Image 1 (cartoon, one colour):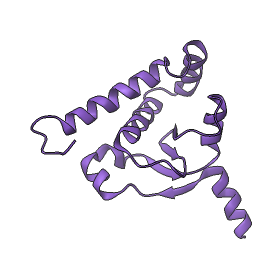
Image 2 (cartoon, one colour):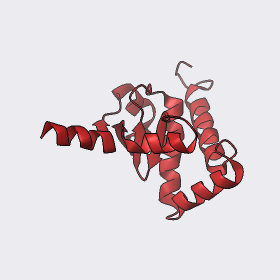
Image 3 (cartoon, helix red, strand yellow):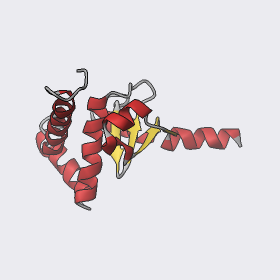
Length: 133
């Protein structure tokens, strides 16, 4: 039975909870499910010529590599991908096509996620926010 549980964890990762300080500071981050490890990280890495990626989103689940720190910028970036998934059923195909045409970094969905995270962080950390940078 332990071997089966280990195999399942290798495939789909282990569920993790968002730390309270992040859940409070960024309430939208309470929406997705979070998992540590799993095959999606390796597949994403292989597509980029790496062994793994720090994070990848599938539907409403954010998969994080075992060594990835729970940083607001990354989590907000991945949260934007959760939103992109919910906006269009065809998002996975559009994302792959965009990556094939323009590459990962020039992919418009990646650019959008980077912009979203930066704007959200500046809103929280900006003047008069009462938050430390």
